Image (cartoon, rainbow, N blue to C red; front, side, top):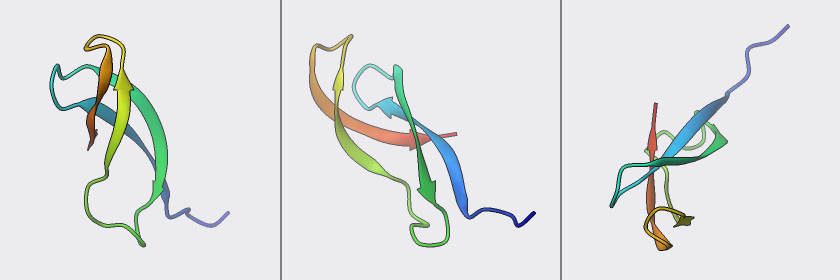
Length: 53
């Protein structure tokens, strides 16, 4: 069984720090931390979500 380059990451709201989403990313292709605009239910608006461990 080969080791996969994809890892599971958690996305955290930059405003309220709630961890809302989890996704996967290719660690070899994208070494930098992921930043996406996603909807935060606590803030009730679209905010920037950053990758956390």
